[in-house]
Amino acid sequence: MSSKIEGYFHHFPPKSFNVAIETKASTTMPGSRSVLVAKQDFKAGDLIYKEYPVIATLDHDLHEAGTHCNHCLRAVDPESAITTSDNFKSTFCSSDCQIAAKIQYQNLLFSLEPPLPPQMSLPQPTEQAEKRKTAQEALVGYLAAHPSRDGPALLVAELVARQLALETEKMITTMMPGAVPKAPGGDFADAEGGGYLLADHVERLRFLEAETPEEEVSLLSGVLSAALPGLEAFVTPERYTTFLGKIAYNAFGVCYNGGRLDRPETYTDKTRTPFGTSHQIGSAFYTVSSYLSHSCTPSARPSFDGGNAELHLIATRDIAQGEELSVAFVDVAQPADVRRAELQAGWKFGCTCEKCTEENDETGEAVEDASKLEPTMKRFENQA
Image (tube, rainbow, N blue to C red; front, top):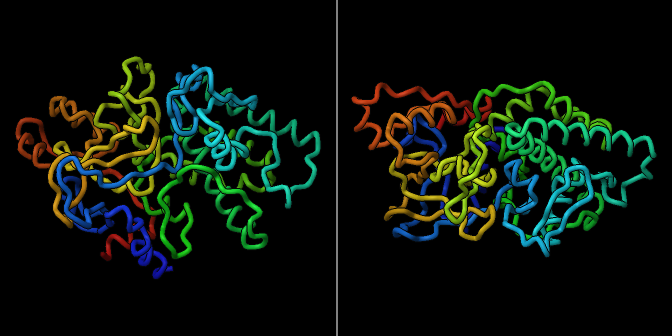
């Protein structure tokens, strides 16, 4: 177990990203932690890397409007948009996005199609199809009735579905190579060798203590159980709460073209975005970018110039090899007390960057970091 934990960062991030993860005292955040560092020099304006998300979800009002792709979050042309007849009524910008979503999470969560490949599927009894339909309608109804919970709850549901789909794919491919189709388009940054799964990436990330509505756990368990009895064991209340805390700490707000001005004020969830969460169109979760530190004078910025959820990390100033990489989790044009309040509300820490340190006498004492690590990763960081 220890060799697998220690060997992880030899295989991840991919070498093409030109970054590494090191455990050391952060220059901008409290304490020692695993941070992203540059493996080469970069000039201001350089592209450091591009990264596709593991999962991404639209804000609920945009999902309801059908104006953006539910998979890549791109604005869609109404004349060419693809809509689904399943319980979630998704909209896609292309057949590639529709197929990728179906393979990765849509089929399990919102479709009545068999959850396993044809080679392993038995005919689905009518009563099972009805049970799936009822369970899915209950989950969709909950999301519609609680739009402020839609983002976090749907991200967790998709994350669970992706883990199950990938682990099922690995098992089936071992027995029947080629039996599982590959999703088209780009996918998340994975480890290069070592046999690591998505679960290994998620396990290593920091998380916050989160309040979990019991109904959410029950509804997702019902969807999984109806699809394939036994899958519900994957979603215990403790695991769901941890996933929710990882989404809360690590998700980025997707903003392009300056973001939007009409996000409902009732959406109170926080995501990492220098534009401010009020301008995002949706949220996305990344394996590499989750290790970026916050700074009010960041060395880089997330860009979504492609008009979708693919994150482009751009250097905002010259960066030396070995330097810790940071982005702004909030709009740093705001006054120090507002920044500090948002960071405390969203990520439970007080910023220790140079700008905040200089302002500290006027704005009060720094807040201790309340983020947590799972036990195996905590032991690893303590020994580093």
